[in-house]
Length: 379
Image (cartoon, rainbow, N blue to C red):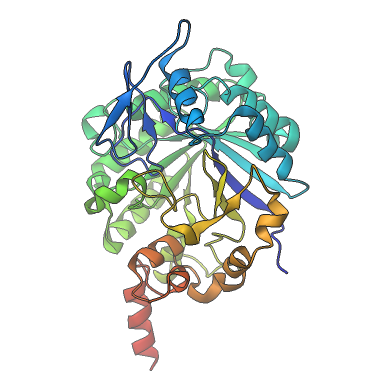
């Protein structure tokens, strides 16, 4: 039986968010003053607060009542169920700290795993009052920054990136490392915009910039036209590498689903290990406790893409038990069948009949045509 030597877990512990970004990859639940919107933003239900309760607390309470989010005692059970595995967790959402139990959960993770194994990803919607206390629980702060100015924002709310950067600046001042994350939508890929974005991060002293793929998952599933082509990704990566070399700015990192591009373009050596560690070391945890083989395996309704991606409930079962199942073992054993390709994109584009074969198909559009051309040339 295979077991991971280490685990990277993204825990989207709440679905509640104050933003309504159309490309939200987890289809977070938007809470306004009187409405709780559906994950696809097409309908809503009344949001009823009680005296002394903010809208985010009311939204969390309603979701917990319907079983869509765990109660705090159940979230603590999740932490207990991690057992002795070597886990690094990213506490995220929704917006992880705008709900009442967010801070307490962050502290519980830091106590269990040590702050060196805890990172935090939130928006700048509500800046925590005790930033020093928050910083004492984490080794790194992650924030989305995909627009150099409000006028550049097309797939997120206009003030989203600037608010996030403001929060990053404040957390950076506490001495914690900060990492910007840039999902590359097609509209954002032009040389002028990318240079302005990089320079803003450099001016703020941001430590890292993670270049990410635009995933057609979550609410992004409703607008797949924002996903770039291979040529556009190559152009963007080349531009950011040039900026990294010429400017004293953040170190440029590529998300696992992009790393193989540099290898195929002859710009980097082939890795010894598969850059895609989905279902092997990388997992997602939904607000209701469902463990996913990938944090990206979600649809526009905030549910798993399909049952194949679900490995069980971590609030009810130990991590060891869930990773011992045939489904989890299959992910680990078959991981290298499409070495370097993204299993989410492979599954979404595969024509194989069996759902369980699709993530392992050579069908990631970013690499499939290149693989076919190489195969023909070899023959």
